Length: 221
Image (cartoon, rainbow, N blue to C red; front, side):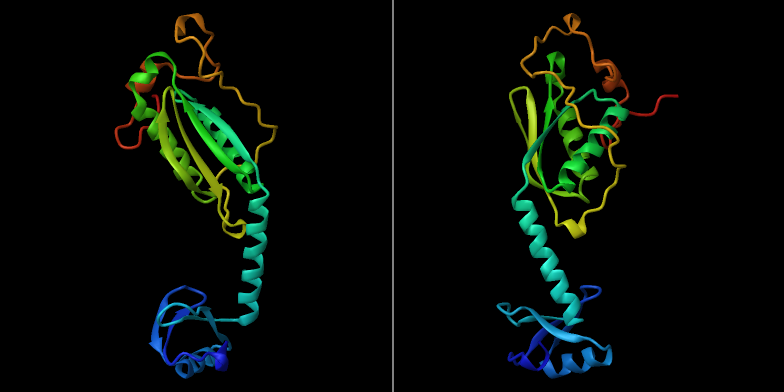
């Protein structure tokens, strides 16, 4: 930090904006930092040249401590599983997203499974679009550990929570406990012999109302 930096030249980054200021001597960086009432902190000593931030040393130490605590919390998390059908209704999708955010905010990993039944197997691209929609909607809470892959009659992927201080909910917190409502993927494929889920759309409705750009059902008029 400051006068203790021994490298002849350093790459300097603004600690507030993460924008690069330039490559200069430590003395030049210290002059800039002192004019702002801040410090020069070496954050990547192994880089060539070493990377330093102009930031309050106290603030930097606090961020490092918080980051280490977040990593410790994530190590103790569990793997939660959430199942989807490609004909899920908007209401059910929102409810599942609320619970998905809750699982991730508790530092759990999330395994997401999209199940196919009957003639749904003829349209795996709809399942992939649904999985990509889940990734997009959870990007402020998680990153992708395992990309969506199809195996048999299901597509699955795994998400891990990002650092706690970076998480931001897109959906409201759930008001009730989560109850899985998707049946076993090995159920009989004869759709006429099953009672459909109360909030699902038919396959014909999905195909007739599918948007070409993102795969979401169009609004009905």
